[in-house]
Length: 174
Image (cartoon, rainbow, N blue to C red; front, top):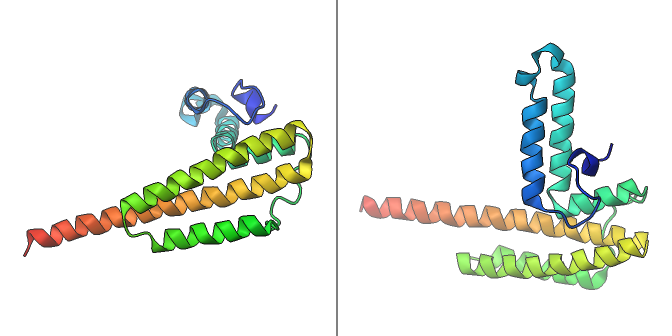
């Protein structure tokens, strides 16, 4: 049974995350060890499998990698990206993130990253449908890079929020 089968979804890059989450919650309820005391070991295994499947399918990069795995084309995904133009752009985006000091700058950077991701999704779908596995794997690597950048943007936003709250706290005691 594939992860898509588990959640009763078509094996596709584009899925409804709302449906995925609803099916995940229903399966967690069904397989939770607290509700399966008579078969607790099996319930723990099933619950763990549901968690792993959900974590894989909820992110576009891991979902794309999983689609490649289903076609036995997921080898080499840990290799470096060799696209020089992409690497130049990636370096510039990282520099923008390092230099961002306002929520507006981070929002603009997030928007730019989301545009990149949307383009890569289209590329992956074309490469996957044409069975251009090498290009599809390269696109997964790029999607993974952008997922990490988005995580770093979230962290930067949290730091700015924490700094703002700390500054407001300081103002209260002056």
